[in-house]
Length: 103
Length: 103
Image (tube, rainbow over the protein chains, first blue to last red):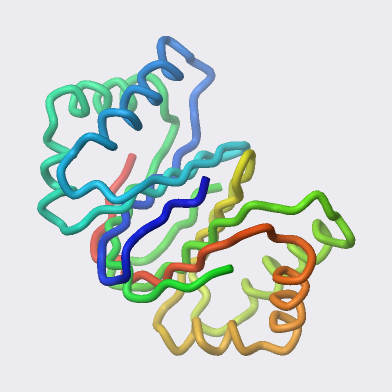
């Protein structure tokens, strides 16, 4: 359930959000975006959790992979629905992972 | 509830974990560590969510602030308890936040 990523350096996109009360297809689209992201070139893995806020961290080989995924047509449509309908607020942080360790 | 961080660059520590079944003071210590982290020099904010996995992202001014927090005595004790008792597995990823945007 934790992402098995390669040795750094690689990139992370930290997406944190507060949802509205409106469902309107959210769960289906969110799952579809996770599945679709996993098919993209440069995708390395993903970790998600939600209670009061949602946090999804996706891992990528490089900045170009992140740009391409952001520009993917289906993802663009989902991003617009996110802004208009599903999210009260969100932050996207693009990060270079410099070091990793764990248990 | 989302962290209000300054303009990049700054640093993020992505801590993702899978818990054991053992509570043994986990909730109290986890909250105390969040409170204590917030008092450290260079601390910029924090975001947490947990359901199947836990994700805590803390934000820091620089790598030195992260090193100092990792070495803090009370935090060291909590880290040992985490390894021995609370976490089945975890990953720590140290990242440089290069870009941020949102709604």
